[in-house]
Each structure stands twice: as C-alpha cells, then as structure tokens.
Length: 266
Image (cartoon, rainbow, N blue to C red; front, top):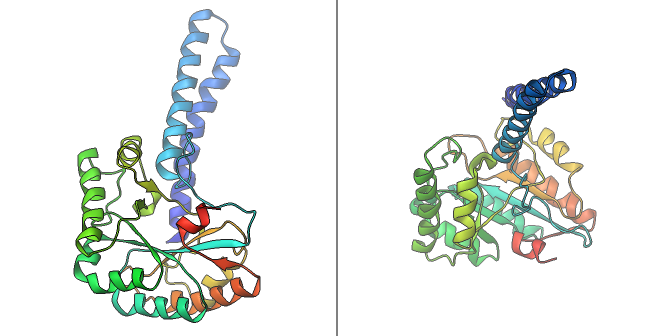
C-alpha cells in the first residue's frame, strides 16, 4: 500500500512538472512574440497548478508558512502525535506506555470516535496530553465541497467541546490534504493546522520491528512524528510494540517528548 501511494504521488508530480517543463522549453524555442506570450502564459499556468497541487497534497507545504511541520531544533525536544482515535484498548495502551516512559503526546481525534468514547477522550487530557481535532468522520477535505469540509472541521471541534474537552485550537487534516478555503476557514476561527515531519506508515500492517526502524532516523530535536492509535479494524499491536521501542530510544538519546503546543512554544 505504501509503494502504491508513493507511485501514484510520483506519477501526479511528474505530470505537474511536465506541464511546466514542456511549455517552458517551447517558450525558449519560440520565434515570434505571439508564441512567446502563449507559451509564457502556459508556463505560468503550469507553475500555478504545480504550487496548488503541492499545497493540497504535501501536508506541511504552505507558501505563507502557516502550517507547522516541525518544531525548533534549538532544544532537545520532539513531539509524537496520534491520529484517528480514541480507539478503546489501543488508546489505553498508548497512554500506559507514555506514562511509563514519562512522555507527553498530542492526539488528533475523530469526532465520531470522541462521541462514542468521551470518557477515554477526557482521560487523554487528564493525563496531561494535548488534544486536537481530526474532522468528524475523517473525510479527505480536498475531495468534498468546501461547505462539507468546513462542516467536518466544525463538527469535529464541537465533539471535543461536547465531551468536556477544552478546545486547544489544534487541527490536523486527514492524510494532510488541504485546500486554500480550508486553511482560510481555520485562520478566521483561530484554529491552527498541524502537519508532521515524518510518519512510519503504521497503518500498512508492517511489523513492530519495521516500524521502529523507520522511526529511528527521525528521533531528533524538532521532529513531529506521526503515529495512529485509531484505524478501527486494523491491528494496532505492531504500532504499540514499536511505540515502546521508540519511546525508550528517544529517552536514551536525551530527547524530551512534549505536546505540540509545548514544542512550538520553543
């Protein structure tokens, strides 16, 4: 699954790059003003589409620098984030591992799951972790009408408030996909979209050893690491095994594991 996603992303990127390169080459060879203007316009249109595609599909890419994807590297701190919960026993084991290793984390919760397990969502906060919204039903915000995307964002935050969780104004888009209208809505409402430095593809059924190996090179100051405690119907065992190793390795390297607000505060 990871390979297919990467291949699809590569193909999409190649098409967008060709949409810039081909008219740019033609522009360099054009011998009349009319053709030069035409190919210049096509080149600019291709660049605009390339930038927009990067904005939509690359979680931390934003020409206006509004979306954090890592924290300051001046202190030995990093953040681990968990998406798609709360998720019953899996989230409970995550909390136990975090407590055992003296670590704090940030949980981006799906509104439907918060509605189903409000006590577990409150427990996450009670144990000192930060909570943000991950929409209400985990819909890709780039594939639905803007009104639907906005409703998903707002309903997700309403679920947190209904569960008695103080809104930390943190938001993460499913798969990191976004669009200008979504970011504008978040900005107007004082919400901050959070991306990530690296993920370990822990929803792809890899072994715990494989997941922990993927994480090792990212255990360094400023990293925002993406994991998932959710994904109902998926075996969270490998992620939980890897998490124990990751937390121990981070502590051995002298890294303090903090929440996203703490990391971004510097």
